[in-house]
Image (tube, rainbow, N blue to C red; front, side):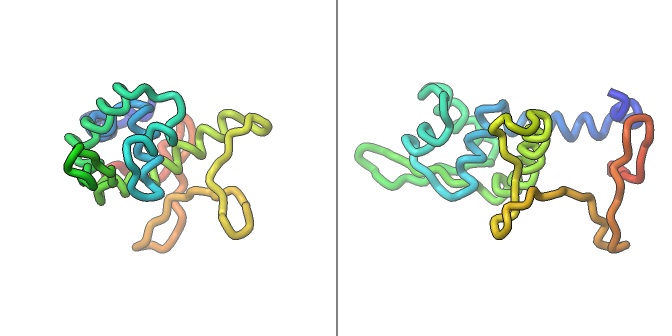
Length: 153
């Protein structure tokens, strides 16, 4: 990865490692995505995350709680049942999940049945751009072999 070589102290690598250690794996990302629309009970999550086994969902929810991404709020004491909510930190993942879904849809190509985020009003696929609020201008991310104008701090 040429991008990581550009950073002698591997700040980007460490930041990604920290993020991934809190989030986990693909199942965890799918659980977070399912919670973006609001709280869900265990059975609702299992239905929303197609193909996830009960024990895997339980493990992922516990890990996401430990990472302070998800919080369980009891709605029944006997038997104990909870609804799962995203924390503020969990809701901050929405943008990253949209970027990943965009990348996945682009990689899958047209006709794959994969859809990218789109504007609800007109259906146009959204474009993501880096923006500097201080300079009030778009910033190019650069291409392979070109460092671009991004600075990782």
